[in-house]
Image (cartoon, rainbow, N blue to C red):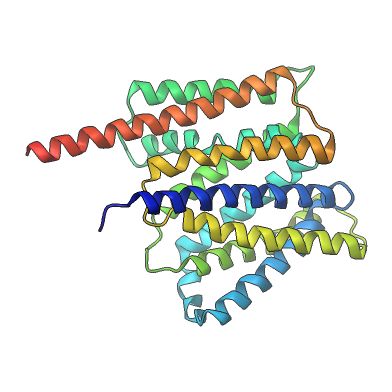
Amino acid sequence: MPVPTYHDNKRGIVSLLLACALFTVNDTLTKLAALSYPVGEVMLVRGAICLAIVGIGAIYAHQVRWMRGAFTPIVVLRGALDAAINITFVMALSHMRLADLIALKLASPLLLTMLSAFFLKEPVGWRRWSAVLCGFAGMVLIIKPSPASFNVWALAAFGSAVGSAMRDLVTRRISPSVPTLGISFTSALGSTIAAPILALAIGEQWRTLALDYIGLLGAAATVLSIGSTFAVSAFRHIDVIVVAPFRYSLLLWSALAGYFVFGEVSDIYALAGSLLIAGSGLYTLHRERVRHRDLSAQASVH
């Protein structure tokens, strides 16, 4: 495979920045709806619109043939994990500051490092373990697990981060022959099916959505679908170590959206926790770059 060029990496960085901005718009619009309507109802409407967008995209691109590959056990498992991630994330979204929630979600690469060490037996040195511990310290500062300030919604956000790490672990096992559209469709379907199940489980009382809120969720589904496309493009034929750090632009976008749309300002502990998580993630990427450089040097010697 050809080595990624400067222009490949530039495309990846721009695509990832756009994806993060669009994901923040989706989160903001979804939170606006979830503040007024039950979580399950919000998820169902947004998920149904996402399914329609992905389905129309597949027909337009003449890629309907991916349907069989989209329902293999490993892809269905990923879709189920995505459903759990969306449930916990949207539940936390209506009760937490947006920037704090996103910071917790960005801990998923650190959790992925830990899960890879335990389940895939990947070598993880003491430096990366130290970064994971620092990231956990950052999560503790945001969650504040004391009797006086404990927030169960922060625990839901942490569950969403754990689910994201598990989903990424499962994604590694999906065959490259399964198109991205197929994976996206299965994930959207899982989240849509999970919505009424959640509503029944917690006894939600649904009511007819006002037209402006349907418009909000339609816009959220649209930007989510476009953002997902940019996110896929961001990691196609690029140096992951170069592009991946730009995912932390989510911290900036979410802080701006939280402040200007909801008037949210994180406290000093949450800010410190966010910085610890971002710093730990960036250091983990740095150690990955060093490891790849060392492996390449050893390969050239032999």
